[in-house]
Each structure stands twice: as C-alpha cells, then as structure tokens.
Image 1 (cartoon, helix red, strand yellow):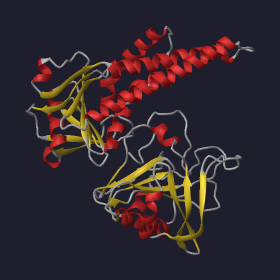
Image 2 (image 1 turned 45 degrees about the vertical axis):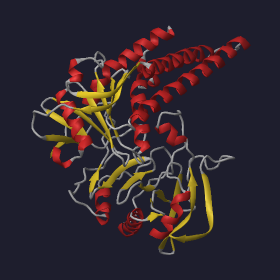
Image 3 (image 1 turned 30 degrees about the vertical axis):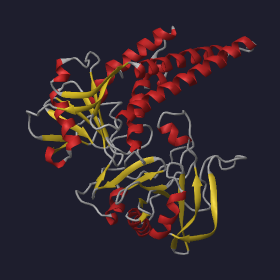
Image 4 (image 1 turned 120 degrees about the horizontal axis):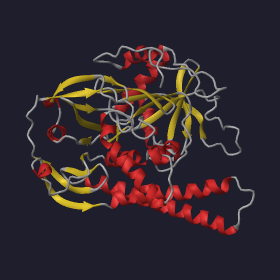
Length: 446
C-alpha cells in the first residue's frame, strides 16, 4: 500500500484512534485503470464498524474465538471486474432481509464464513449499518498466497476488517494489508524478509545453488531474471514451511544453518542438543526436481508456442512434462508440510539453508554473552529498530535469541501458538528480530 504521508503511530492505541492513523496511510487511488477511487469511510461510520468488529472479536461461540472478515461495500457495487461474466468468479449470496451489524450477529455468522474465502458484506442503509449477505471469493487466492497455485480471485477492492484472535484487528484495502492493531499497538507489515535485507542475504547463496543445480538437472540454461518462478522458488519453499507451521497453531522454532553444518559439527553440538537426529536431503531433492521439471515443461511450451502446427507426439510430450511438473511440485509441497510437522515435538527443528534436515526436538544449550536485549525491526532491511529486553519474551523466543546470537551465520524463525511468525538474525553487533512481515502474497490472515 503506497502511503500519501507518514502517519504518526502512537505507542498505545484504541479502536477510536484508528481512523486518524489510517488517514495518513490510506491510498484511495484505483489499482487498475478505469476503476473508481476507494475512499476511507467517514470517521463516524468507520468508528462504528471498528467498534462492532472489536467487540465481536472478544466474543466466543461454544468456547471458540470469533474469527471473521468483513467488507464494507454497497450491495449495488461491483465485487469483481468480472461481474458481467456468465459465471462471475465471486459468489454473491444475498440475505432475503438484511440484519443489523452488531457484535452478536457477527459472532453468529462467523462460523459459516470461513475468512480464507468468505467475507461478511456490510453496508450503510437508512443511516445504520447492516449485514446484507456473504461474498465467496473461493480458496484460489488463499492457495496462491501459499504458493500452491499461480492465479486466484481477489477480494473486492474495498475496506476489509479481519480478526483472527481476540482484540486484534487487521485493516486492509481488499487483499492489501494497511495496518494491524495488536496488543494495544499498531504494526505495519515489513516487506518479506526473504526477499530483501539480512535474512534474505543469508539464503542468497543457497538460492543461487538451487537455480544452478536445477538448470544442470534439466539441461536448460535459463536466465533467472526472466523467470520469477525459478528465481523465487527457494524463498517460496521456505515461506510454505513457515505458513504450514503457523497454521498448525502449536508454535515451533526453525533454525537454519549454513550448508556445511552437520549433526556432528562441534559448532552445533556446543550450542544445541538434538534429541532426534534425522539427516535427510528429501526436501532439497524435491525442490530441485520441481524446479527442473518446471524448466523442462516451460522450455517445450515456449518452443511450441509460435509454431503454426504441432504434431500429436509433441502434444503428448508436453502433457507428460506438465504431469511430471505437477507431481514434482506436489512432492515439494509435501516435503514442506513434513518439515512443518516436525515442529509438533518440543524443541527446535534444525536444517540448513539448502533445506537439508539435520534433526528436530533440539534444545538450545548456548548461553548468551552479549547484552540482554534484542532489536525489533520494522523494515526488512532493519534500518528502523527498537531496543527491547529479552525478559519481555517467553522461553521459545529467548532460546532462539541465544542460539542465533552465538551461531553466526544463522537464522531463526519463531512460530507462536496464535499463528504469528517472527524472524531472528545477528546483524553486526545487534541481534535483530522481525515481528511482523509479509509472507506469501498476503498478510491479512497470517
């Protein structure tokens, strides 16, 4: 989201503060030519929307938290640029009669409106807010955000408010996150730490090694600058592992080492005790095979694209390569899910930057000889940080801090039970943590 000006974020905020903050962050300009501006609602309307959402987030239904996504959109407005298609991609389900927009109604409707795909539609009519229906955008966008498909249907381009845990609200314009109110404060997502900054730099050599080996395996010399799927494959795999782990909701830690580290390396043994040693290159091999299969399929498709005629044998070969690509990508996703599943055991999962598994159930034994503080970063490059003492964090965080601070280079990812993901790396003399950053193509529900 491009900002019009830098908004001053307060240390402690309340729902009624959000409109003023958003005025400095909300970009109303259309994302696509010919589309209308998307204006922020007036303060009175916005405050009522936020009040209802905030109080609904604190309610439970049979012990379950109220999880939802609402969109503020007039019932006569377009929900998709393809509304005029014979079968529009967004399903619009209208209630026979609208119901008041209240915390109680939001709690009652939330169980039938899976926020990954369904938005509860709200409008102002006759001077009051009402719920008039449900908008089903399908699972394609959610799967695309998790690198499970290449295309998806976007949410309506309008104000969207999401809550996945009590007292926390994420405010977006469509699928583009603007700010999140969490723990009485405001956070804005940094760009993906896997694409730029110190964490990305840790993985750079491994990413290029994957590209080189995939080109060798496929026999195709592809320029990664001309193929995003190739250049970002390694980062996308790591993001899948993080997302799958976060969705398990049991918390966990991933510790990434340089490729030369093994379970017998004294540098590792002096810093962690690994209960279950599980040396395996399966994830590494799976990703490389998927990248090579994609290169082969794309090379033949490009070769046939400009041909006036294509014979049946070539079409069969293209189908076979497409099938092989799908199979290899499925195996790679399964490998990412397997790594995520290892976090269910107490202790950290230890692996290398090239995705070679070392083991799991690791207990950090390293002590910390430096200052007892971590620097919280608000940008991927860690150019804007705030000093925080270790004591403000729990055992899982402090263990990761000690390990990463004593083992350079290394990167740690901490998954909380509420689904949050944090990254940690030593940057010069500072131990830096990124508490909130983009993963996949969306942050709204991460």
